[in-house]
Image (cartoon, rainbow, N blue to C red; front, side):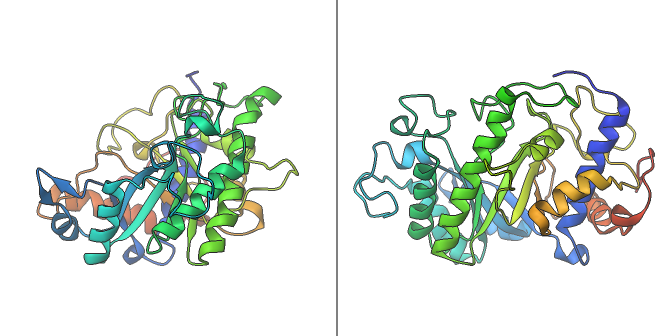
Length: 329
């Protein structure tokens, strides 16, 4: 990663603050807690615990390479003999219905037959193969209505076509291949998922603050061959870090922006246009937070959640002029 100045970190921090605000458009009561967690641990069902924690969405990966190790003859038919739907995903969907928890499935990895024998992070040669799998998955799991297209494709480790770019630099044609390819995967999958159910919501973008292409650059280059934006319902972003938020620490290094870097009054018009009015319409946003304690019986955890809800609900996050200070709650 190439180091960037404090000004640019503030601009991207404004994007993250705006995303947080987008999670709670009316009030903090609109906040929905999601978790990546196993169905069973040491043989014990974890969903009673998730219910105690107030979880509303359980997230998991549905690996295409695992579910379709060989090419199906009827790719959109979930009963095709080539499909091997993972037991863990089936258990997740069953228990989630039982405990009235929504499920989000991330569709990721490529089987070798779809990318000329490449690694799992090499996208398919034909985007429609991925879209057909998405349709089959939606038919196999009709109670699932949240679908994430890939995960952190702005990282080379997850999406082989991604080549590192210095933050703030214009992408070369070779570097544009990754977001352009991802845009086609996203748009094709969107059409197939919506053909199964209009209730299906498609999450796109799926960026990470520390990606090899930074979030703003990824969004700016997320274009189809005709120059249009790919269709999606929700923009997903991972501002991951390994520590709890703290407003007393220095700004993050190496261009990585996390919750601790949120400025007090973000109002970045360009980023707001890119994220909130993607393709001429407003988008909802989904943020993932790594390693944030959430036990309901811990006063520190409750205080953290209250703090972030207050940040998310703050009217200044949408209207006030930008400031370089950070909100202290």
